[in-house]
Image 1 (cartoon, rainbow, N blue to C red):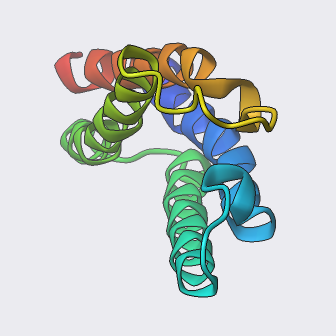
Image 2: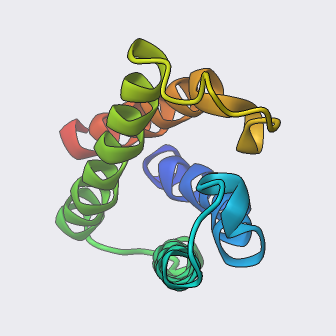
Length: 128
């Protein structure tokens, strides 16, 4: 059962850093963003923190049904497709090539690897 909860711990760790970046430094995620865009990015950071709270609840429960864990793993795992897509597009089309700033949280290559690992762990839990 511990290995089926591992992706939830990984998600909470990975997304805490991302959430804090979106909330406190939205301009690192979207350089030259407008005040309205900053509000949306901060809202997204809050949403990521909410997913972390779900993970903490899952981790804190001594036992949850296998089906419940699989369904929650599918739900949270599906999220990781989108950061993978974003990272891939940023790499393939050199979206950040014009930016002079240091990439946030390691840049798109690191994002792609980390989110692929999270996705793989969730898929393993879904299939277990």
